[in-house]
Amino acid sequence: MTDDCGLSGSLASVSLDAEGRLLTGYYGIWQDRRYPLSNPEPFRGELVLVHDTDEPLEHPWSAREVRGRAPAWYRNFAAVPAENVHGVVSITVRAAWNDCDLLIHDESPDRTRWDVEFFDGERAAASGALANDGISGDPRGRIAGWLPKSDVSGPISTVVDYDATGRISGSAQQRWEYGPLG
Image 1: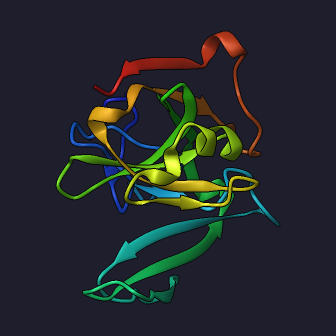
Image 2: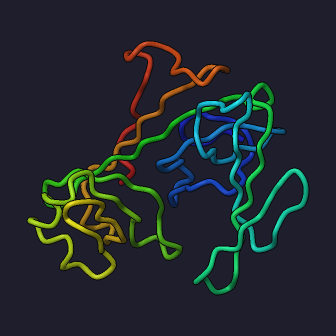
C-alpha cells in the first residue's frame, strides 16, 4: 500500500485524516506494516513501536490500558532492533487558527474536528482559544484540544526522512510539503 505521501507499507494504528494521509508523528515500517514510533532516533540500537488496539497484544508487545475511554483500548509498545525498521519519517502537520500556529495530531471519528496543539500558549489564549469547547490548557504552557475543521486554515504536511542511524537524511531542499489537507 502507498499512502498519499508516497510512503509504502500497510498501516497499523497510525493517525490518518479522511483521505488517508499521515498526521503529525514519527512512523516506521516493521514487518511490512507502518507503525507510529515513540522517537525516530534509536536508543541502545532499538526503536519503540506503538500500536493502539482494543485488546492487549502478546510478545514482543507490552500493553498499557488507556483509562477514561469506553470501550477500553490499549497502547501497545514493542522495542525492536532499529536495523529491522525502515522508511522512518517524521510528519509534521501545521495549520493556523486566528493567526495562531498549531500542530494537527489527529482527526475526530466523525471527521469534523482536528486534535490540535498550539505552538504559543500565550498568543492562543489572547486570541480566545480557551473560549472554545474542547480547548484547554495553561497560557504559560501547553494549550491543546479539538477545533472544528472549518475554523482551521491551511493544513500543510512536511515529511522528513531519517536514515538507519536515526539522523535526518537529505538536504533541506529534499524535504517536501504535499499541500493543503483541505
